[in-house]
Image (cartoon, rainbow, N blue to C red; front, side):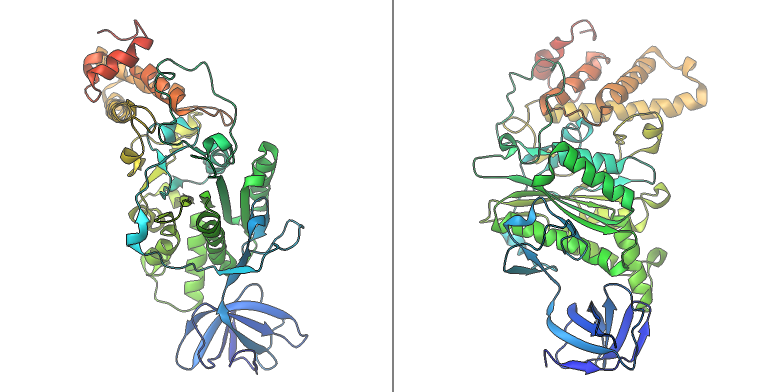
Amino acid sequence: MRGVEYRGLTRIEGPVVITARRGDVGFNEVVAVYDRSEGRRLGRVVDMSEEWAAVQIFGSTTGLSADDGRVEFLGRPMEIRVGPGLLGRVFNGLGEPVDGCGEILSSTRLDVNGLPINPSARTYPRDFIQTGISAIDGMNTLIRGQKLPIFSGNGLPHNRLAAQIVRQARILSAGGQNTEETAAPSPGAGPPLSPGDADGAGSAGEQFVVVFCAMGVKYDVARFFLDDFEKSGVLANVAVFLSLADTPSLERLVAPRCALTAAEYLAYERNMHVLVVMTDMTNYCEALREVSSIRGEVPSRKGYPGYLYSDLASLYERAGKIEGSTGSITQLPILTMPNDDISHPIPDLSGYITEGQIVLDRELSQKGIYPPVAGLPSLSRLMKDGIGEGMTREDHKDLSSQLFAAYSRVRQIRNLASIIGEEELSAGDKRCLKFGEKFEQLFLNQGEYENRDIGRTLDLGWQVLAELPREDLLRIRQEYIEKYMKVFPGTSPG
């Protein structure tokens, strides 16, 4: 029976309260727990049996008494209030405003667990999202409706990269890239473009916005993101959800669900194109392991629960485009790999669920290259369907393939040189090494506030390929070589 308080708790174990199960209590149902001083604490049902219900509290259980505590099952799942006023606001991990501007003026409340999407209702992602970062746009392209994680490590600049993507990301409409204008190198980067830039909206009436979710981050990291968004002027088009490191584990588990619920409202109710940036998924998984341990579940790989895969999928699969809706959700989750181990359960399972990954390389970072995107482990599985003539530029596919192949050879030659010495290499191998240095310093390396359009990125790709003999450019059609390589005369023999 709803609205009735039940006195007495069976036992209290850390943040988990065990109580007798009442009536038709459901999994993930919100529960109010009261102590003797009439204080009200919310929690949710995380486990059940025929007789008992385990309730995890959003906060501390200090002061709760098993004898005097009272429980009220509210008969509804965890919900957040959504409305047109979401953008430009800052919320905590439970979806409560923390920016001092009051509640969202709306009567609409949505279940944070979302609703399952019929797979047959999904439409295939094809629209190119320009991040202004050459390593992503040129070789690991982000497509609208895609989920493309960033695999990083402790001390690598993933936070700076995430902030830069939020500042610069925009959607290019089909045919929006003028191939004639980009046949020559651009003199420099264009001015920064905010997420709400009308030119990047794709078509009239569509708006590109960002939902940013930070889980388990320190205060200085949260302050960095907020200051960066305010300074660059994009905060008005961003909804921020912050769950700091000192918040309870359960809040970290709820935070990305609140953020994705807000994104679903903006995408499918307000017809906006939403980019969801979530950092750090490793903190989320650590919280999941902690909660699983408290519940006494049998651990799996490295102590994580056996349902880690399905739990991550419940977040990642909330991205996409749905038939009948003009909006879309694109996900860019960020996770730090423990000990830089890409085979760790978190990046390993994330790679199975998502459509590729962008891997940050510590060696490149130590060489002063920003962003240190590793050329070979990174890929975007949907890239082939979102680039080319009418989307980016006709030479994009061939150019990207050649850059991958040439850089792969560079890595092989560097390994050989570490054994026999660089002076023993052939002239062709030394020239390939020169290409590798130019590729890293000119193509990969760019300023934190440098926003390169796709034309500039592709021109830089041709510029670094000019270091190689034309007979080595086996992955590019001859007509493209004749059309674009002539921009750099004398640098590559015919």
